[in-house]
Amino acid sequence: MRDYTKFFIGGEWVTPEGAATLGVINPATEQPAGKISLGAPADVDAAVAAARAAFEPWSQTTKDERIAMLAKIADVYKSRMGDIAAAVTEEMGAPAWLAEGPQAMSALGHFLTAIEVMKEFEFEEARGAGRIIKEPIGVCGFITPWNWPVNQIAAKVAPALMTGCTIVHKPSEVAPFSAYILAEIFDAAGLPKGVYNLVNGDGPTVGAAIAAHPGIDMVSFTGSTRAGIEVAKNAAPTVKRVHQELGGKSPNIILEDADIEQAVAKSVSAVMANSGQSCNAPTRLIAPNAKMEAVIDAAAKTAAKWTPGAPADAKMGPVVSEAQWNKIEALIEKGVSEGAAIITGGLGKPEGLETGYYVRPTIFANVTNDMTIAREEIFGPVLCIIGYDTEEEAVKIANDTDYGLAGYVHSGDIEHARSVASKIRAGYISINGAQIDFSLPFGGYKMSGNGREFGKHAFDEFLEVKSVVGYSPAA
Image 1: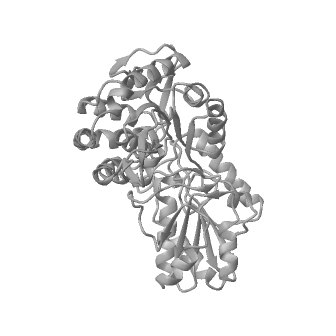
Image 2: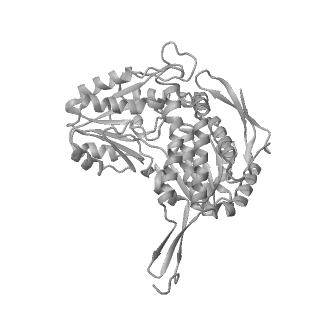
Image 3: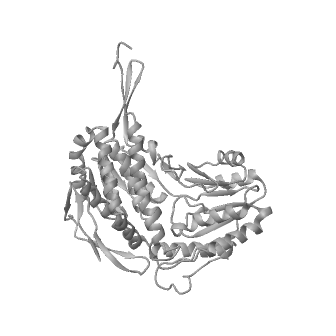
């Protein structure tokens, strides 16, 4: 049992103001795996005070000093990747291959990418007789989710540190273990006191206090669109910058000239990985009606390979919680009631997996884009197949959504794929199953959020822009 009941504030592990604790459930066993404290607004006040005190000295450090600091963090992180992977498996049920690979490796990727960006990043530029100067925005409040826990933390922390900001962070109370280990890593690497502060708690209490706090200059939130709206409302009275990476219902257009079997296999696997708990998962597969029989056959064959089971050796683990399991099951039931046809999977836990929040990999055919399962983010291993007759219709279906986080195109002709990709209204497009690139900006259109993470574009989220006129009168 992990006892993570202290908070990391001002470089020390401190006893929180609030006395309440919360048990953290292992979703594979449905048993308690540890406990955390639930913070109070007073804990946020203490963390903000520490971050404000640290801001001036940290913001004045040089590029080389910050690079050296993040390189040290990356080195310590490497030595504890096994601990990170074990924590991710325990807190959210990620199978070993996923926890040790993409989940744990993602944070290291963000650290190393930010170092490379920093080496070339210019904080000042001459413009005529004036000068444009980019300065750190100040104290940043981070509220991060449970589905890719260390990825989402590192995607925010790395650029914030490189731009000279300080941090107050609330990880998800559902999956807080890996964040605690990250705080230990920052401490062991010698990050100055107060630059990073961790306060556990729930969204309505600690999350709301961070968003509303007058001592926080910017809040960055990753999570559901519903919760993102609340963050923006709470932040509005202080007119702070709000960055949001929110939900998605990403379209995946398979064009008629694609290799159907290969394209569908990649598409189904992209949904089933992480038990469907990825905001950018291509959950609406938009396929040609003329080839629908081959599409459905390939989808069913691929889904059969994603067998749920105990995280130690399975390809797919459980979903994160009982609440999440209930939500997914209700939406599967809704799909059936609205007339969609289940090709594989369906309601109930997989045979032999009565304990644990396991969901059967589920594929729906005969889906129309007005059905609930095509409109709402299910956040589970559930794929909707929607047919089209013309390419124009496929693009129209793709864009007929409240979301715009990601989009996918499969084609045997790269120019054809590029043409269709240019018509999808989303912030991140993958062609022919290309994997994510941490040097490219990531973020969404419409109700999928605002601002961008990853690479150089992430730096700008944490900077204010100052113009100095008359800086070089001779010019």
